[in-house]
Length: 158
Image (cartoon, rainbow, N blue to C red; front, top):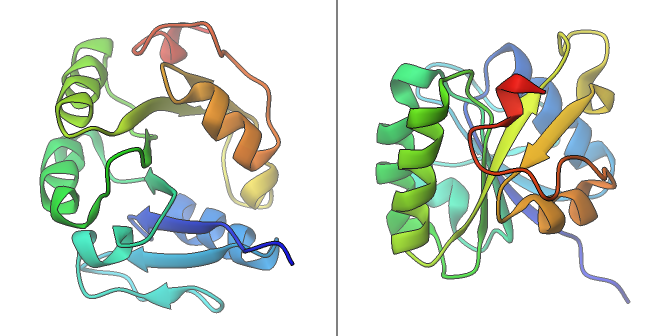
């Protein structure tokens, strides 16, 4: 019997709620946290960023660029070494590289995730580009095969 993939989702706004719900509908066990938005149907509401990450093999951060470093900092106590941390904020390459460095120092595998179209009406099927060390792992988990050899910070240029 195959175990369901456990995914933590940070940020349950417009994109985060739809991607989290899509992952849950696809059979993943999804735990989500957003201080201002409730968890959508099928997604277990977590009490904090760290709580959403506990036990997750993959964490997808869908917060704003301004919140990205704080979200990672608050998530770290719940993240186990080897967890893939995929950041989908729309920041410049420098911020993505700082996030990757922080994640790497904590023993995490970082993926730079770029959502390439509006999420409404597409949900989980929205085109995405994944770059950085966690790209291969992230691509394997979500069935996508994008940007595996591209460095962190390059997803915005593709």
